[in-house]
Length: 519
Image (cartoon, rainbow, N blue to C red; front, side, top):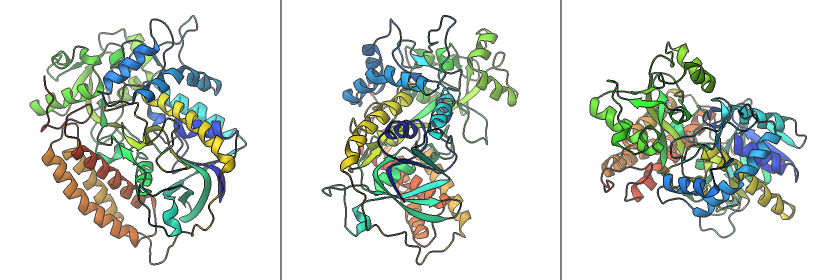
């Protein structure tokens, strides 16, 4: 199969790129589940953009840089903040409905780390509303083909022409991908003039995550195997307030907008505690808040703290957070009268595949977008609600750049079909499930909110055994989704540990007890 633009992933980044690029060629989107199975669909809080005075671009830039703890790329921050209003207009043009006040202005929320109200939202289901609008626009476009239940196994490069490649190989390029049809188990060679990887995050490398089950780091792992450069993988952001409801996956997210609305974090004895950790108290940046909750839970031997919104007007709470109210009521908690039990959970990967301001990776003809990428916007810690707008801005940047290249890019012939020789169907599902559980325990126990040199060393040693066992199984087994996802998660976990061991300081989401912060 041949296509001008191959987009792997169907979240906000991939769909936005597809809509922009379709004016310049045919787009094929492959996604391993349904189109709306993605992190975008789970984003409750909102999307940020400077909209009204007294907010300014300079304030948004400053907040982002402060939250990123000195690790942001200033050019990326400037680009995203200044292009945000334009992308909001695009979303509205595609049919996204944001909440408005009676006089027609956007109703803006404020979240942790923001100095002004600048979060546009649709109730507490903003991501789902954005995804709905994008999916409808994509399905209606005559030049976009969507292949659901298709899993991209590996990217095609000169390696598949028999060349030995490294990240330093001159002219290293991507020619498409091997794609597994999950309905037939056939692997198709999909050739593309331009390939975009936008598969979302990797939260499922941890036992507890707010991410959907599809977030297994596939894109980061594929790009890593293809020899693309990755960076900042150690900065895994834990959301401070996931609903504490043992046994439920993914962990239900209690949006940060609730703390912006005035909710207060309390210990199980009712005591407020965030004033001991940050002057913004319950509105402190996520890394500070998650670490504070972790510290208090560890000190007391408790599994959760409370989020208290009972002092706010009940009708206003129900109006602003209908989805959260409904979810909590389903497990017997009326949040207008009772405190919500919350605990931190893996939420967002601030690093990823390194890209330029055009979204291009270190491999020609290969772009990475959204949570798969590392643009430099987030630095060591993502500012709340910056991720959706980053996905849109960089999707637009990439579509402009790729469209300019497409006319002088040919399909690469000579790529061999997938070799099934010597493989058999997996009969070792139990092994795959057990290995996945072991990997998640390793990451949760040793590479969590708080780490140490010893814990990272131990994690790497244990993960290396799982890597060898999984590669051995992969090499003698016909590809299937569970095994491919396990392989990808182990690759991403390796990058988190490796880059965490290389960083000899505590900053942002990476807190190492061997390098405690001063002061």
